[in-house]
Image (cartoon, rainbow, N blue to C red; front, side, top):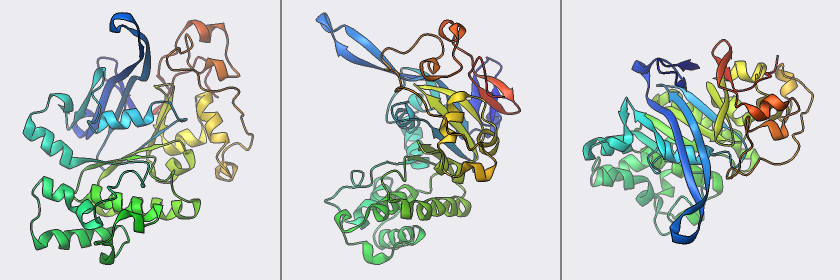
Length: 339
């Protein structure tokens, strides 16, 4: 869902008193080169005025093509990057203004699972050391309790305790991703950020992994911020969806509603590429986008999607469309939305 605050800020989610993780007008700028005297020559707006809310027990899917800013936003949300402007709040507290004790609590409650299961695990450590590292850092468990907890975590993700004394090189990609999930679950977080969790996995095991994620959420009650370029993945597990293009959210709303009647042409094009979507009531016509996503260091004027949009007019080049409610709880940024 999406709503507008009194100050005009639009966010995905529900009322502020139930907000779990919230971003308000977040931007992230990177200088791409340096000139004489250290002056920046160009700036990339990797994330441009993005707001969202994740509520307890919800899965929010964030989708878009590679390079649209999804992973950068994920790293901002977990506190690995400090935004150039805007605020990220956990339970109404700005994560970049937290005290040391608040930061420790935030890191216990917000965990991330990275995209590449082969790079996210230390090859020198055993699975026992990897899974129990958060417990040791936060001094949650000690001695024999660590091994008991590690066994419990591996059982949650479908691995046996025979994996504890082995190293990551002995496991497949899917098994490594399960180990990453077990590590993220160690501190019983309230939010898990999933950055392309199945993109490095074989298609044959993607569905198993997505079912595991759903089962864990149903059992443990945490929330997911799911980053993906694959709308089919988001459609299986998410409750709400936000579609990003060139650093901006161009559409958001309940998954079923957005997937059935998208209001932004970019969303319609992405959905048209989902196999067998017509069986679920969608259109069977494939929309092929021309060209590539523009250079984020030199974005188009007006609507950033206009250079690839079949509906573009001079108005699209002159005016940036605001993100407004175009259907009940469904928001889009387009001068000529889909009907």
